[in-house]
Amino acid sequence: MTQTPEASVVTEAAVPGSAEAAASPARGARDEPRTQGGAAPRGRDPHLDNAKFLAILLVAGGHGLSGLRDVPLAAGLWNFIYLFHMPLFVMVSGYLSKRFTLTDDKSMRLVGSTLAPYLIFQCLYSLFAWGVDGRRFQFDVLDPYYLTWFLLALFVWRLLTPVWRRLRYPLATAVLVSLLGYMTDIGSTLDLYRILGLAAFYVLGLTLSPEVIQIVRRPWARVTGAVLLAAAFAGAYLTQDHMNARWLNWDSSNADLGVDEVTGTLMRAGLLLTGTVLILAFLAVVPSRRTWYSDLGAATLYGYLLHGFVTRLFTFEGWNELAWFDTIPGVLAVVLACFALVTVLSTPPVRRVTRWAVEPDLRHLFGR
Image 1: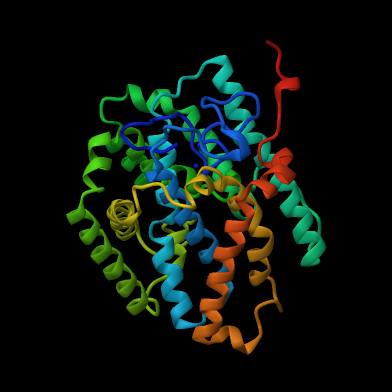
Image 2 (image 1 turned 135 degrees about the horizontal axis):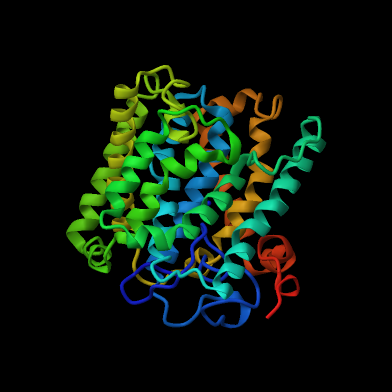
């Protein structure tokens, strides 16, 4: 699915986290200087870097649980995570894009940070599915595979940033677009349902004031946030037998989900509101001080794009059929393993080896 949106530092990028500040991963075209060893630039407020790292743990854990949802605990955890983890990344992306303008230089950076890695990983994941799962090799640029949709969506959202900023009521407009989009049969082309449906969270980030971020860092907000997250998990666990999890993927029309337009619109509105509340609750419980994982939070794009080669195995037939995975220890072990995996994949050694794919250098393709 992106440096810190705190009041003191507003950079302009935002993927679920790039080596910089999740903003402009294209090498040679960065807004902030890097410190040696891949550390985050000095002067950055670590609050959002911490949030991005903890959120990428949830992303990996959620993907690991995707093939285990016959287990009640796994289903409850999956539903809880999917209520807000990608809306969080999308909101952060919008918050960090406040200063984005469509100049020639920034257009080049946008291509290097989104479209280029999208094409690379679309091909790599297609080869992976062909080699591991025995599928026929198919490279479809217009049909995002697995988690690559976020890069394509981010390209579109950032491209439209100047338009959103010019609107008088940008957030209300984005919510309307989100709700109306699911009333049409769009299909899977470009994953437009997600682009339209989650755009409201991007615009929320664009319009969110630094003062709100400061409010959620107060002690009373931390307690409130913890209570709200606990209540959300309890609700997700208790309702997992009655909830159609496809709602949480944001990739199907109302008709595909078997509901009428009024019911679908009310459900989507409820998910938008729930996602917003849980985003703020999550930001409230995230440490605002510098931690051992703050630098990793500035490089979560690596963990995001690379971990899928492992977690995808749990969705392939035969890989998740061991009875032990259907136990509580098995579910927890999968989650912890995914946490460890995405942490390792965000470290400097892995970044150095995979930078060609995650942050491709496109300077030779563009003239001055």
